[in-house]
Image (tube, rainbow, N blue to C red; front, side):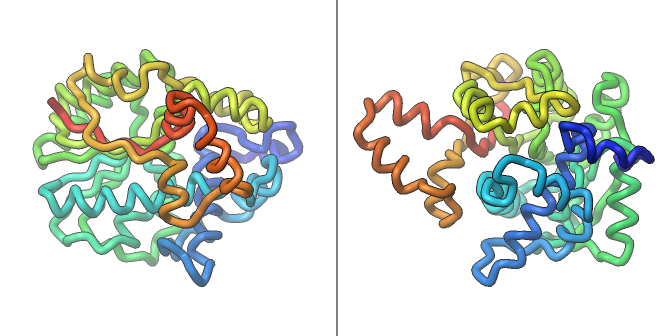
Length: 293
């Protein structure tokens, strides 16, 4: 993840690759954790994000002000992870885990098996930064390139042997092609035999919004966003998955009191819009729990 070329900070895009987005989001978690009214606490986020993560936030259009979707995503996923563990998950398969410190910061039972999977450089960096931290459950680090089908299926078979399995793909799918997402969905169902799959999902409507806000241009060069399915969670049905729960990022931002600036005005205007238009806005992005059929 952390290459030797630091000159990338002077390039138009501050993000060199998809792994750099983990540094960026870690700073957002740090910002929330340092608030007196925080809705979650990640005491490791500031060190994990580091100076580069802070620089990325500064360089993004309205960087600090746009922390709210990531904060909402983190808080909602925390809630769902804890619930699924209570309901029988014995193994969490966290794919492209990045700098996710949930097994260190959440109150999890000791017997839970947590597979923290990412590219070798990211795994190395995370372990170096977390060397003095003690997890609340059993953590197994797996350095793997999930684009290799044989490597992926071997890992998924390993997870299945310790099921019931819950999968997390936080901040991953949007960077994959639809074909890659389909292959992943099939293998998680047929090989990992996962019971639950927790993800975030974005719509074509969000893509248009990001284009107008200049965010997409900052990312497309080195970390292109590609997965904005027209059919929403129905995309996953042919691969053996059904939607169990959809949490609108917009709705959850009001529940958690972490809304965007001027959100009250957008909410007021939505009441004057046709119902279908308002619903499309609600579904622009969300946190989704799928269940295997």
